[in-house]
Length: 389
Image (tube, rainbow, N blue to C red):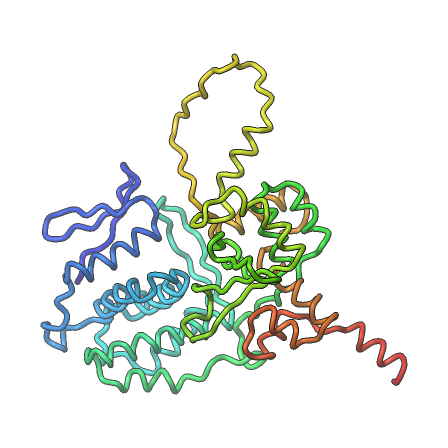
């Protein structure tokens, strides 16, 4: 069995011991897990290929697969975490089994386990309940498990029939299973957006306004740099190198009209070409400017902080979402997420210019994808019914 990842309560850090040597992997659990699997691969501690096939356990295959996926998804940690979640289910249910002991019944039990709430203990010893996955979440996890067996077959660790078994599992269909359904994402309330913009810093306010004007994804706005925007054309143009569908060979373009240009202009003036336009440091700058200076002598040095604060050079989509969440509480409005602004913009464009225009702005290759974001114009249906029905 491979060495386990352990948490040291005294130092609040994670470590793994290999051949008597401790490797410390930091205090963040997610980063420690990724570092652990990367270390397993780099040190080649999994002598799995040389072991007799009868002795191979599924947990060992999972460790090798997860380590390989860390490198494969190094620019897309979200995909790695989705695969890791599926591997956690597989390890808990069948990690101690040999691959030849894994069958169709195990796949059924695995899917049932995903749809059932489970109790678990935290690092602090607290007992919590993991909520059951929704129907789409279960289908995604089962697809990840099929990818795992496909990878194992390609590496000749297991026969290909395990992957074939996964293909026989039809995905859960709405209305034909007991798995819970998620609520459809609704457009954000424009009034709530306006109140939130009044309490956030300049960078977050600008990102919200850009999403309102362009329908861009949160991650696309967070990653903008001055050098990415071509200002020699009108409207301004930005071709994104990194985006959600780049692995599918798709292109993603953002266009900034007069209103969006007005939002971008102040940031373009004070940022270097290679710097991110929207930075968390703006929050602390604004706080300093708002201070009256009462109680401090002229020229007095700032008070040294008891702890160091590390500020990232740009917002990520998660930190951007956290800013919105806190601002909703401060503004006293129902919580909404940055991606809901994309839904709001798509619905507006669909009503004014049609679904093809909405799909073009959102960067969708197929109109059925745009249907997910743009709400159907029910007012038009009511008008037709009143006049012709």
